[in-house]
Image 1 (tube, rainbow, N blue to C red):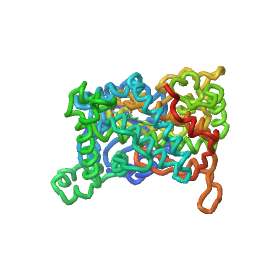
Image 2 (tube, rainbow, N blue to C red):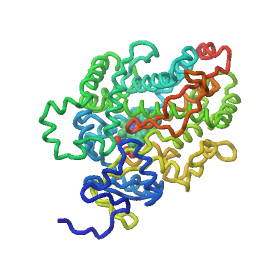
Image 3 (cartoon, rainbow, N blue to C red):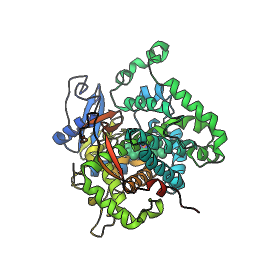
Image 4 (cartoon, helix red, strand yellow):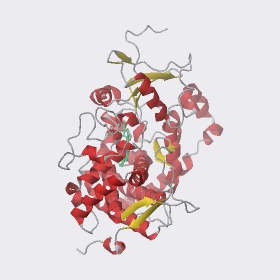
Length: 481
Ligand code: HEM
């Protein structure tokens, strides 16, 4: 028996006794349901799944109040047993509870990826973007998704482990990661695993080798980790990467052993999703591509962009912001957990409640982003064509990277990867509709989503990239020093 709380829980769907909303919460495209409920219950609502209260936050002001300003009480993570205990064996930074181990990992990752440190990866990102353009030029038959995958994993691999560039055709040490990402991210969705729905089963599962063997991950995860361990010592001394930072400046080997694939998984998936949506947006909204291209041509003439051009190309940053707003790669956000009881707007958010920032709705908060469903980067620019001052609670107009003490630690690196690759592709190509195997032109459907667990991608579609310069390959060669 528990005393009736003095404050009510946030309103929301009632579900059925004991089970709550377990039958209403989908295991795929979760945010679609969250948006539907937002329209019915408002920016703060809650539901339960098997006794677990989930509070969904869909307004920027509310997210700022609860997840940023009350971060000391709202930056824990609920324990996802399947992913944390079995798939990643307690080595996923993003899943660690708010304890000293998490703080040490977070510090190490921050040292390596804060906005100043992220500049150390500029050369890698510029090189990778030129390789992306070159590959798109030389392999027009290959699926654009393959190029985007190569680009995203290669940067992640180099930034995290100091690896060499991963070629489009050739040995790719990151391949096992694809399988790992899918399994990890699927496990992130609340209610997606039996052991998380019925935690009392955990002791039985923990003792049963037979049941645990059905978890798909340990072998590839182990092999990827072993690969880092072998190459790490040789490459670390001559590269700039997260592991070097951690290995030589922080608490050493114990942390590197623990951090491994988690950081790579997050960055690859988010960047990949965003670049796929970029191609969709450029085909459906050619006027946005045109505005950015005019600025590129005016500032650069016919040479490819570099980070030195950053200040003079606000159109590109506006485009990146709009891309992440229009199609947030993680539309249901990543959940936090309340570590204390909180009273907010007269409602009780109880200790242990799962806090879910509904990124899809946050990115469409009408008080700040009136463009809603349309793709319009000009909303981020003032009358003089400069970036507008970001409104309160938007994290520089990037609400997509999360909140409070859990805010994405690699956001500077991610933004830079998107900025330089988008600038290079727009400078190099006209992006047009491709044709299917019957020669029929295909218009990508912006509402055809592929659920990849935490991230959501557009369904694969053909795209035609028309080089804007006959001597594009020559123009990509680095200038002689
Ligand atoms: C477009 C690309 C990316 C997107 C959309 C994205 C988004 C996110 C989001 C929504 C979170 C959860 C924040 C929260 O709990 O409030 C997160 C956490 C995290 N991100 Fe990213 N991210 C991206 C790229 C990256 C990159 C490039 C890195 C690493 C270099 C990275 C590393 C992490 C880590 C380690 C966490 C967990 C932080 C913690 O729990 O303390 N992410 N990211």
